[in-house]
Length: 368
Image 1: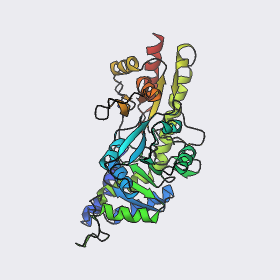
Image 2: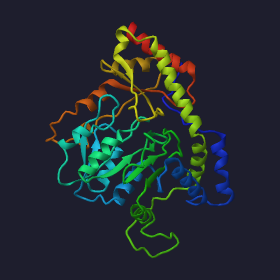
Image 3: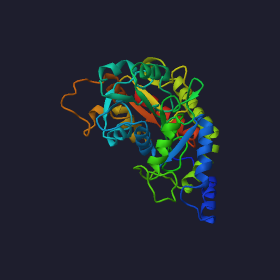
Image 4: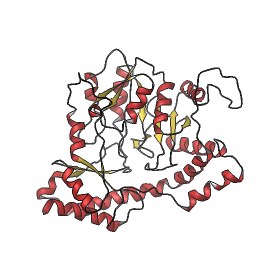
């Protein structure tokens, strides 16, 4: 049985939604983008928001808007997609890597004092795998040390810490609508803030340093971060499907737990699925399986069974482009997560029989 790692949950509705863009001959950022932004603000509860072409540029836009500049330092978890650190580097600033908590794979605030210096101006919590970072700890640490907070919420649409949507705790929060995200526009990003001054800065930064895109007078230096109404039209449909997508993903998570439940005991006590902190809800962006022994053998087994899985994130401190000769810290939890974690297929249209097949393959591997 062939099992894909991921498939976007799109269909006829999205195809039909883009047709009016061609009928009206309005394909750049326009009325559909305005509608999509309004719906995203309603969902997140943020006061203001602007689009970017993708999640990486959303982070860059957010960092620039809160004043991150060359020479600054930004605390970033070692265990995240490289775009989190690259957006900091794009600003001319330096990412400072910290370890993660072993239980939920989110940033370990206790490790931040190891790297913070007088040049550290911000912290970037990353809400990973459809779970929320402990934002009580993050905000307390940021306030204590006068740090700006930029939330990487690329994987956290619909995710809350307590009663508050991820991305709205800090100075800015950044979302992604890449093909594998909970809702997708193919490519796309969104930056939210509750600070009107930050919002005004983003308006200038994203539109060539002007507020009116029809003007050729540019009061500030800015760039082009506009999206298209074609993307936004897809996003509106996807957002309307969010509850359906959420329920399907939660059902898949429960199926994995159910099929693996009979395997608990003996060898299987060393296997667990990453769970959220008690104050976080969970829309599994990925179903992350952690194994006590190194996971490579299991991943090879999946390949033999024609099951596409994905590794978790390769630690940033080990990335060739970020390796430094004077970095002696081992990042034990980040390293352990990479060596022992695997992302199981969890796309909304995944059939139950395939989940059962995956779980039986796990059982066969360990009880052979």
